Length: 303
Image (cartoon, rainbow, N blue to C red; front, side):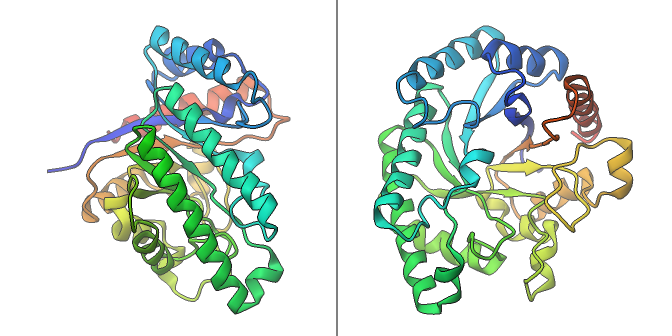
C-alpha cells in the first residue's frame, strides 16, 4: 500500500514580496489551493527580530487558523545559508549559530509546527582540507545537533530536520555520509533526527559514486527518514529551483511518477512534498505566482 503523500509549499516565494501572513496565506489557500506550508525563516529571522519575533510568530499562527493553512515545519532560508552556523571555527561565533537554531525552534513551537530544520552548518575551506580538523569539526557539529534534538523534544516537536547539501563542506554530502551521520547524531535523548532531502541537491561535481548524483537513489536509500522532501525542477547540473512549467520540464530530470515510485521503494512512511521554487528577486510578482500555480497543477495530476 502506498504511503500518504501530501503537497505543500515553502513560502520563500513571499520573501520581500508578500511579507504579511495574510498576504502569502491568501495566495497559498485561494490561488494555489494548498493548505500545508513550510515557513521560511527568511521572513522572520530568529535573532534579527528578537523583540518582535514572538509577536510575528503568533500572528502567523492566528492567520493560519483563519485561512485553514497548516504551518507544518519551519526552515532556515537563504539568509541563514550564508552562515557557517554550527560549523564556524570560532567557538563564540559557533555559539551564536547554536543560539540562532534554538531561537528558531522556539518560534516553530509558537507557530504550531511539528518540527524545525534546514541548513545546519558549513565548514571553512581550511577546516575541511585538513583531515584531522575536518573530523573534529564534524564531531562538534553533531554535538550541536544533539543539543537541538533535546531542545526540540522539550518543545514537543516530532523531529529535527537536516538538509543534505551539494557541497562537501556542508555535510551530509553523500548517501553514505548521510547514513553515518543519521546513526551518530541520533544517539542519546531527543527527538529523532530526520532528513529533508532536496531533489536539486544531487548536483555535486566532486562525488565519486554515480548514486550520489541520482536524486531517486537518495529517495530509495533514505525514504524512511524523509518526512519532508524539497521539490524543484532541475537539470541535475546545478541547484536550479525551477518551477514545473512546460519550459523547464523539457530541460529537467525530475519526474513526479519516478519520485513517488522511489519513495515507495524506499519504504516511505509518509512524506510532505514541499515545493521550494526560487525566482530571481527581479522577477515580476505575477510571473512568480503564475509559475507556482502551474507547478501545483502539474503535480496534482500525479497525486
